[in-house]
Length: 336
Image (tube, rainbow, N blue to C red; front, side, top):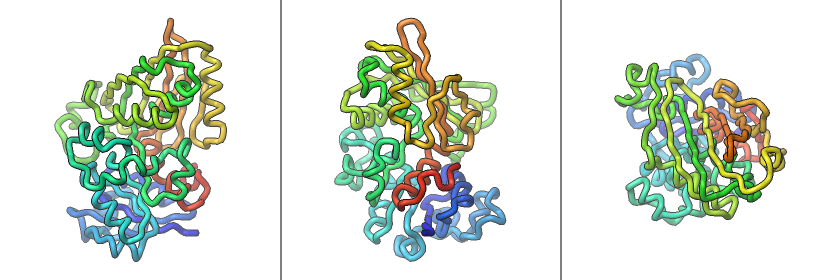
């Protein structure tokens, strides 16, 4: 089987990562790409790294044209703008992996509170497959729309769920401290991500107000059945890519070995989640779809440390993994 893939919103870093991963995929290839501002250009006109490897021309968005050339579409549009585009793609019979937050949460009210927009397709909130095959493979397999997870939530949900589900940590006392590379802020120029602002500096941002906080809370509850109280603080670091999340937990019983064992039991058959003895670093997973995590004792706290690549397992790699599940391919195709 050869899966034909389209990208809507092809100019950003996640799209560039998709192109890189599709170039090496044994059973999928890029057949269409759209952008409002760059229609008429070849792919390498906006992503020079693809020169000589892909001759797709960028077009303006037309769902009927995409239907003729694609089996699945990766929608890389921002929240609010994505949902209506996804609906048009579904209406013509395409399957979609959506990179925005428009379908991730369980509640319309929570979405509208945190994203401050009216949702254009509220009927799909809470019934759309969340794109984490480690927990939702059966839903993803038959889905017409998959909500690709947020990058920070991926680095928090994967360590948290087994520990909370097993009753090993207090769900009312969770602190997630995360540090991300600058590519997580997108490709559009912004003052806070200029070289002179980010180089030789590290800064917290969106303290107490980051939109990924409700996603962490919602998905941990959805999977484990337990409410959590999470304090989430993101930081911008002077590197291109990667996320390191340090998670502070209060154990309710058991040992560090019990926590590590709960992880190993949960992820024994997951090809990308690795429970390690060393302290993970972003360089250990850079450019890959792999997750490394470990657990340490610090006084009366447990500290979980998780490293992912924000552009791969945190975005485009997860999308390829989801596509593989949707079309019955090997989950690791194009990712190992």
